[in-house]
Image (tube, rainbow, N blue to C red; front, side, top):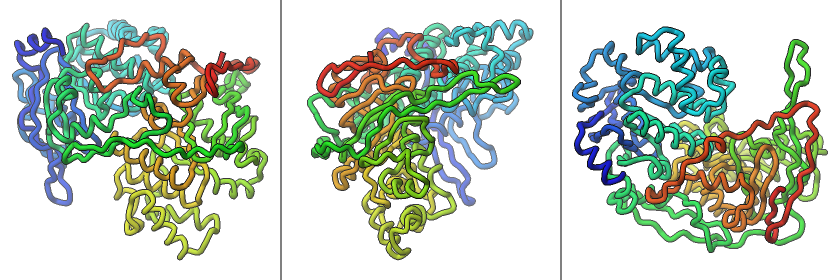
Length: 611
């Protein structure tokens, strides 16, 4: 925040004033406090960030402000004032007029916030008609103006389209347009960029900042990402286990944070460009939340096997999905999800496949596992082409290559104990008796930093980070040589993410594991990789040693990905992204489209870029 803005903020009454907010939930007949004595103000034109990890109480704080918690199971105490009005004592009918009109809210997942049965134009128009006296024709015109304002291309023609026809970034733009329809005094944005790719995230942040400048709206921004906090906020409130542990100007929080937890959060954030001078992956510093102290991160030992034969080799892998349309359901086009992808992976090596949603990286991982059958190409595991194997032979191959998915809770059967889940592949592959399986379960749990007695618990009794450790333990039960990790840490908080990645690096060192690490997080990829392959529209456009790709990116798309990463330093806020560079182009091609042969140029040893 500039000195001029600080002076302006000091002259005006706050738009929102929260004092002594405490929220409790009724659990097993007793009131359990979730938010305890939180106080802050949001001034006109100001952005205040509430930052903390899952369970810190930041989202409950926003729902308390909006009075969206269930009355019979929640209790809100303290004071919440919008201007001079006390919101906690307002009748529900008056509060309903404030929601969407004077206070608007954007949620994390736009697809669950938008009604799939109504067009986006009708949904925005409905918000306008509810809070104003305009006619339907005027509401349509204003909706188109709002869609243009949030940079939806061809806004008039897309008025009548349904939410599923929009990408994640475009859907979030629609939600922002809807939130701004009544020109609210305060916009509450609850993790609005968490589910988005880095370039789309950058564009949404730019959009919120631009609209704030034009409309003078105050913003309460809720996030767990310190990079986003540095990018957008003027002041920051740090929450930990329901308590407000530090509040101040964002610049001061980053430069001279006082609370150990704040320092711990900042230390756990991967910073793009911090790996210069390191040739191998670097462990994350594990920070003590009580003291804020951390040990210097340690570079891992050289684990890459230098033998000529890779443990995994992919040659010309291609997967296309056919599109049928019209009355006769004729072939009208194809989605070129994976197009002529080739790479190899050696024992003890981590190769990261990086790119935005829709670039084909997850389809590549699934095609390697034959969870999605590829159309052509070869996948060689220890020299054997697994695409030619029958069902029985594939069972044996799955002992060599295992996969970890993004959502650990969806990967575990809620009706099975975690011990049974870990033992299941061991028993299914007939590697030993049930008694042997118990020993394997205990060993695997210890390997991933859990205790054998946890085997009797169910998935819902664990945190997200612990569940991901359990999924890793299950993958290790078959003693694989390759693990495909598909966005395996993207849903985790920053400190839990650091712990899981350190675990993966430790296991790689002790078990000689090869990782195919699929991610869209460039800062994490830089930290864990030996080599990096950048995917765009189904093709690898750049591949090489991690240090070469990050220190000398050659392809425009690689540079764009790096430029969009928020830096956890308010003094280094990036320039606004061009609106033309945000959305990934469509991989859909006509049915008769002939794919041109892609040529590569070697810019440095083993560093190739597509021409």
